[in-house]
Structures are given as C-alpha cells and as structure tokens.
Length: 387
Image (cartoon, rainbow, N blue to C red; front, side):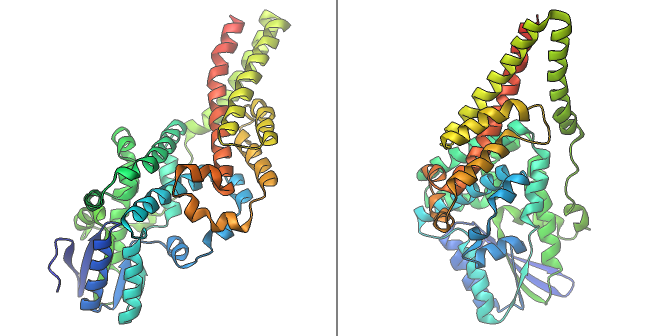
C-alpha cells in the first residue's frame, strides 16, 4: 500500500474504504489516484461527481445540447454563466500546469475500467447544490459573485503549482467564494458541509467490500466528522423554498412605483407625475441599455433593452434581460462551432465576450443588473420630483 498523507483508511461495517484526498487540478493527485487503484484493485471506485457532471465529462458534445432560449426562459442564465466561469478558472490553472481539470477523476474512471471495478457516483446533483446556493444568495451577492469569478479568471496567471497543491485544503468553489463566505457563512454550509455529509453517506453505502473513494481534499475533514453520524439525504436533496422577502419585494417595488406616480398625479398635478414617469423611464432605459452595450450586444438588442426595461421593471413576471437575451439569440444565431469552441473560449475573460454563447448570457445578466440599478436610481429621483 502506498504511504501518503493524502490517503486515509476508513471502515464501515465489513467495508474497507481507501479515501484519496486530491486537488482538482493537480498532476500529483492524478498520478496518485491511478497508482492506488492499480495497487488496491477495489470492487468499487467512488468519485466526487453527480450523474449530470459525469455525463458532461464523458460526452464530448455536451455544449451542443444547450438550449439557450430554454436557459433564458427558466431564469438560469446567471447560473450557467457562473458555472462556466468556474470551469474557466479550473481550465486556466490546468493549462498553466499542463493538466486537464478533473484529471484525477478521469484517472479514477480509467483505473476502475482497468481493474474491473464499478463506478459509484458519490456527490449531490450539481443543480441541487447550485439551486440551494442561489436560493440563499440575494441579487447583489450574486453580482459580487460574478465580479469575483471574473477577477479570479484574471488572477490565474499568478498561480504556481505549489499554490495549487495548497488549494487541496479548500474546495474550488470555496476558494472562489472565500470573501463572500466570510460575510455569508451559510454558503459554506451549502457548498461544503452539506456535501461532506452527502459524500460520507454515499461512500459508506457504496456496493462492495473493498472501495476506493476519490474526493477533493477540502471534503476529507468533513467526511471524517460525519462518517458515523446518521445522515438524511432526502433533506440534503430538497430544493430551497422561495424566499417570502424576495416575493414581497418582487411585487412590492412595482407597487411602490405605481403608487408614487398615482399619488404624484392626484396631489401635485399632471406635470409632476409626468416628471416622475420621465425619471423612471430614463433611469431604467439608460442603465439597462448600458448593461447590454457592456456585453457587446448588437444595436437592436441594446434598443430592445432600452425599450423593455421601464416596462419589465414594473412587471415581476418578466425581466429586461430575458427580452434582450432572446433578441440577441435571434440576431446572433449561435452556430455549432460556437458550442465547439466554448471550452477553449472560456479560458480567458476576452473569450467570454468573443463566444456568442457566453456573450448572450452576459447580455442577459448585464441587462438585468442595469435594469435593477435603474430602479434604485429612479426611486429617489421620483421622490425628489414629487417633493
């Protein structure tokens, strides 16, 4: 048996589990995984993937199946864009060090096939994890996350291989969200603690008596902590309920806007009401249009953002970004090569604006940010006109 600090021996009933702590972008981790599986010849190899991520890894044409119109309509543009930025962060580190992101998982799968072991997927579905995370985060926290992800992509050039080895101490998402996590410790609970419990349960209930489990090193202390604890995975798989506060604001802010205009009309006259409407239209239109322009949207898309924002801002069922995003989809008409080049293009910040797929997502996100800013700018201007 290989002697290494990254290898942990666990037992559960009659099962013997070899737990390997890895960095997701590390040549040493990938080599260690291959070596341990070859030596142990386990019945089962557990990997830190859910089914959707496993399918994405083994299917080369995963991005060709992306339905952008469906993504926009289901309000998942922000989610997909953030996920692509995370993939970009990992890919850039991998390019710098000459190793593919998740190479240790590929080694695990290949090693399992070589020794005749079954593959056991041990992680919670990424969609559940991200949905629970998104449900916890407010709008401006999401904006901060977007900025932090972009900044992280630009900082990768300063990372050395020794730094990547030190990153074993943290989950990749935790590394990128460390600053936000200090303000919102609940994020760590969702991204790390809940998944530690899920991984511990799935590994200890994996089929077979000789098991090798490959997980990110940031999860190992938690797996040890929860190893013999009772774990209810049904609770961990629950989708978060919609926030009552978000629902109130979603309908409350438009009600306040309309109420201000009506009060202004009846108490201060038509001229004041017209001024209030003018400020509402200008603030929303200008900032939403500016957001679309910052994403390098086509002129007609920018115009659609300008026209839509004042109206969608008082209609909780529609967002200006959805309108501009759908217009950009129809105008840009992404081709197969855009999906094929996506993996390469997201390796740089510039590539996010170059590739039609990510540019459309940026149009949606930036337009919505601009429209939201417009709402907060317009309200004091309207109150001032009324006063």
